[in-house]
Length: 322
Image 1: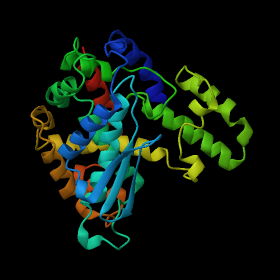
Image 2 (image 1 turned 90 degrees about the vertical axis):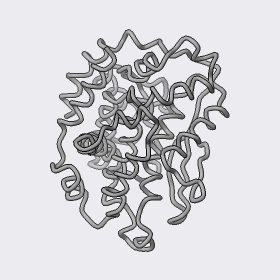
Image 3 (image 1 turned 30 degrees about the vertical axis):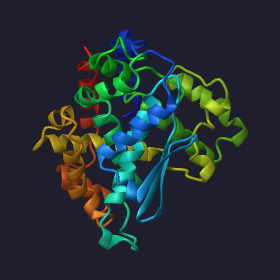
Image 4 (image 1 turned 120 degrees about the horizontal axis):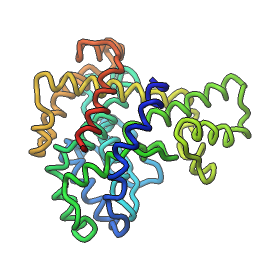
């Protein structure tokens, strides 16, 4: 998958390059961004009586109890995307946590069967909902109402193009859908080298920059923007990053399964987020950790883990811009 992505990305960069500067930068009031994100989270089905939305330097979701799910996002006055995508991503996690059956609370089954499945929910909302043209046909007028000056020259079509540009960068969280897994690959290879003793910690920044130049053609200005940008290793969460890629693959399979009996785009175009949430609640949340991850995904989709739905979705996403 990594080699296939590395071969594919340059062509996708060329196909989307013309849309790179469509989104005006600067002047996005952060309080209004948070208001928009809170409204979006409510539309997704998040229960604010059982949780909170706050700000932090790195987005995350946590449970203080079964009925207290807290998520954080970050924002920038330069653009609204990091706040919006963080809301969709962390909101996907939070809906899963709030949707686990009450009868499983207090047991080891009140959880996802794997972090790959949990990340599939976050990445599904972030990418398959939040990057779709249908979603923005409904939500772009609301965003434009919040930022009429900044977005005055842009319509929903232009916004959809702007947010789906494939451009290699140094930041994983802000990465587009096509390059994201290459960020994961860098981390996976380096943490294996660290654990095997083949890479010393003081040499990590240089090794990081070498991998980024080789895989993505970019390098960080400082370790803060490079190997220190994530909290995972500092928390001891070695081996976590691959769950994002597994989640991306599962998410594409789940959306394919959804579209066999429903029309996600038609629902999103009318602002109907509840239908998707209800489907996920019935098929994913309701089982908690009763089934192994592979068995759960195969039961829902009819297939074991498969990379092809992901690659089809990437191609379709770019084709939809043209």
